[in-house]
Image (cartoon, rainbow, N blue to C red):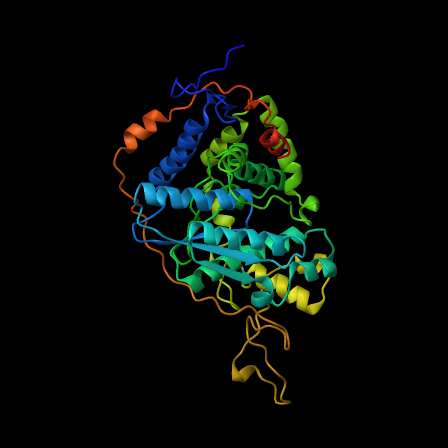
Length: 404
């Protein structure tokens, strides 16, 4: 059988089939459409303003490494005018994060971007290794997710940036939709497909890879020969997300468009007015000042549980603070100590107070030729199989894609 010709340029030999569209394309065209689809997402969603300081959440994995490479490439190609930084969080996982941070430090040199590393130990006084040794592997991802999110915001605040971008891809977002459905989490289901985290008083964060398939990120990293860390977190096999991921991969095998279909369905969900009335209003944590829907934010509640030696179940109890008056009239004549609302138990470590600042309104970046770019990147409506066709003798990327 003669070699197939690229369906886009009609000249070069096709070496792969895109999982997202089933188009058979050459390497150069794959690089171009991959980058231009992300560029289109950025411009149409008005993610950035010219002059923004943007922190790229860098873990050393494939998603964040490709994100750093593409953000720098597009910033240079289209003159976004962004000031880019790398921001890494060290959770304290021996044999995993310490190794991946070596990759991040190499990426810093390769892309010539400033790097900030903030550790759980520095911020919370606990590492994930210590947390897991205390509570076990069940629900440890809850601690890591809560602590990591707040650590990213605090690291960004220390850098003085306006915006955080993360490597969450289409597969991640579709998995989150499924997880929220299975857990009946209506509040998160209503916002989990947002490309930009809403909120006027916290650092904005967005997902440029919202419509980018994980398999294509792997292929891009492979063919670009990017330097990334590929080992899975040693604590993640116990994560609840794994069940949603397995289900999604089964759906994708039958219908590759399932990933985008789930995201689009999530985007169309609208919470009923009566349900919205019953949801808690956004406020700030009485102890650390971070955004919260309770008296204490989740991070402060979990940290207090760790410091107090509570059981795993007790740590997930109510975050509402008991209303104790701090007025002098409430003090008993016997000299009894009166607690201050939100104050941590004596002798326990607390998270430093979070200084919040308003974010700039999004106006977007004007880029010439966007309309033509969108026309050039029209994808096939009828998505078929997601099989890969590689250069003869090259099966490394095939193995990498099959493994995810």
